[in-house]
Amino acid sequence: MKILKYKCNALGDDDWEFSEVEFGSINLLVGDTATGKTRLLNTIFNIGTFVARDEYKTGFWDITFEQQGSTYRWLLRTDNLSNDESSRILEEKLWKLGNETTLLVERTENKFVFSKEKLPKLSPRITAISLLKEEEVIQPIHEGFGAIRRRRFFHDALLKVSELEPIPQDALKKFRPGLTERDLYKAKLGLNATLYILSIHNKEAFDSIRKNFKVAFPFIDDMQIQDFSKVSPGVTFPVEIPVFCIKEKSSTNWIPITEASSGMQKVLLILTDTYTLPPQSIYIIDEYENSLGINAIDFFPHFLLDIEKDIQFFITSHHPYIINEIPSRNWYVFNRKGKKVTIKYGEELERRFGKSKQQAFIQLINDPFYVDGVE
Image (tube, rainbow, N blue to C red; front, side, top):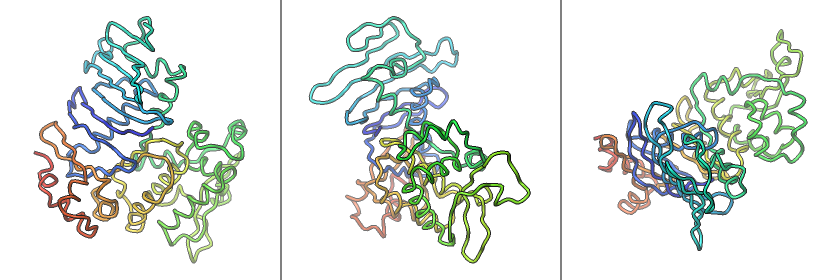
């Protein structure tokens, strides 16, 4: 799934309104603190959970998106009542766009029409895309909303995703040489288990992860999957526990990723996600630079621009290097007045100030729209 055009009002206690914006493949959200960047990312992730996991959300969304070669527009309006019995979908429409526009779903509080056929009353707290996900025309749309991933990089979250886990034999049987990204995505394995499967069944992806990890951390000499009991004497398990291990230059010791810094865990997780997300996924990264050293920060923009995968990235950053290295045409500059957020394109700065990459960040932080930040 790729979001082409997006408008959202986050109702309830937030009640924030975001201006309509058109997105590309790489979207760098920049702006002063508290201008609404993370909140916008939350609305994108929230609509994914509403569709894929039926987690009811309140708000208004108007989204134009691509999925599997087709373009759609989806409008959804829900109420903002906290009472579960009263919360409901007020309006929902889904169009397939093209030479001829086809209205696939039209839904209000009193009617529900799918492909011109009136449906019986169904749950008012579940989207039509979820209710109709078994229908051939809706299934790929539901699949697209299910491929929105946002990683949380807090310490506890990194510990959880990096924790040790055995690989059940029945799970191993599901994988095979030439396994697809979607196979791994659906398995929802942890970081070490995913890398272990890649090392066996997709060595090309595994080697690409290792290569890029070494670029970010050049003091690393080698990386391998090891049995945890072999790198941690005195610790034994009844089954093999795979763990990604690194060996630094001028050292003979293997270090499990579970004992590495949070910055190294974060970079390895992002690399693994990028190489295992299914095509047409959305990947949300909020403030990449947190807890990272200069090498890992320098590495990221070039990796992002060079990676040849059909993934739509949404990133926030305040770091001058990252902002400078990602072309201004990929910037989305935020300004907030009260709860109304206006988003302007970086191309507007480029037209005003020229294409000087060296001065891009300085131009940004001196632009009145950026300086005003929150009013």
